[in-house]
Each structure stands twice: as structure tokens, then as C-alpha cells.
Image 1 (cartoon, rainbow, N blue to C red):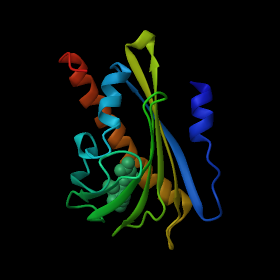
Image 2 (image 1 turned 180 degrees about the horizontal axis):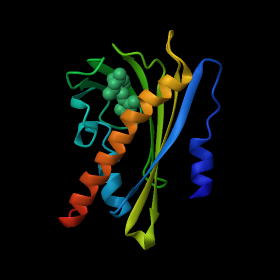
Image 3 (image 1 turned 90 degrees about the horizontal axis):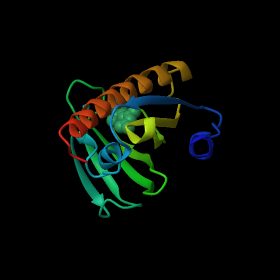
Length: 169
Ligand code: A8S
């Protein structure tokens, strides 16, 4: 686990970039959580700020491009994102934001899953690097992004836990 975290989450940030790591404990087996996280074509299954998603290229494998529609009330309407890595053995998914009408230029996200509690639970580790938008500080940018990610991870936990309770993996 430490090795996987070191390998995938210790990214160097360049000048004008910022980033952070968020973690979430989920009271559900890893295969249940992975079944949600691996679906590049269905992020709206647990990301509550997204209302829909359509693939623009690919079939959901590495290199696929999706366009997500953001729920109303947020300072963005859409985001275009590319799947950079999907490791079914190590349970790693990586994507990059390649377009959209928002301010998160070059957003790069990495999520890894780690089985804990003898397989009864899962720790989700999500890290990112992004350009600091003109007019904002690195700290403001991280507060904004971390707020979205905390919501996504909390929601991922509840959806996974409901699925696990329903005996659905
Ligand atoms: C993710 C992570 C993030 C998504 C952000 C940070 C976003 O979808 C939202 C608002 C924005 O201003 C940027 O894993 C963007 O989805 C909710 C449209 C990219």
C-alpha cells in the first residue's frame, strides 16, 4: 500500500501549480468501490456535481474522452476529460481535464484504492495537480478543489456502503 501510494501520488508540482491529497475510509469491500471508481463513462454515479456524462472518444478504456455536464449553480457548465490510466490490478485510475468552461486548467487526478480491515473496508486516496488560475492563490484553488473532492469522496462512501449492504458487488 505504501509503495502504491508513493508511486502514484507523489507528483512534482511545477511553478504556478498546486495540488493536494484527500483520503476516505469506506466501509465496503474494495471490489464494490472499484466497480464505481473504474467507470470512466459514469462519474455521475457518485459525483453529485455532475448531471450527465457522454463519451466523445473511446469505449471507456485508456485514451477515452468524456464530456461531463455540471449541475446548475456551479461556476461551470461542462468539462472535457481524458482517461490516462486504468490499472485493474493495482486499482489506480488517472484522468486529465483537457477542456471545458471552468478555471481548472490542466487538472490531473489520480485515485488509488487500498483494501483494509481484512477486506471489509477500503481506503480511497485521491490526489491532484492543477494550474493556479490567474487572479487566485494556490491556497484558494486547493480549498475550492478539496471541497469538491470531499463531497465526491463522501458520496462515494455512501453509495458503496449502500451497495455492500444490499449484497451487491
Ligand atoms: C473531479 C474533480 C473536480 C471536478 C470539478 C475538482 C468540476 O467538475 C466542477 C466544478 C468546476 O469548476 C470544475 O474528480 C469542474 O471531478 C464540479 C467542472 C472540472
